Length: 113
Image (cartoon, rainbow, N blue to C red; front, side, top):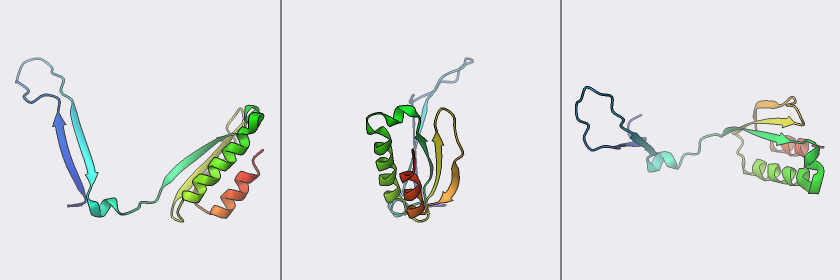
């Protein structure tokens, strides 16, 4: 929509002469939101891939993982979506595309072993 983004372009060459040979020109496109659009928070849709293999039991790594995931969960909004994939040598069943239910996510992360 008009007025929602700024678009600028920069070429790697000021001039590109017409020749019979192929030429290489790099183009940098910068797309920046306007101040109004930058203030709008869009819902997140991302995945957490959690390792619960045997090596994670060493030196409290699994506890650190749980703490990090809880920190991320606390930053999420109600309209965010998250997929959780847990693996231990092979990828296990995961949760995909669920709306964030903070209490449910927290309790399930706590039960990771």
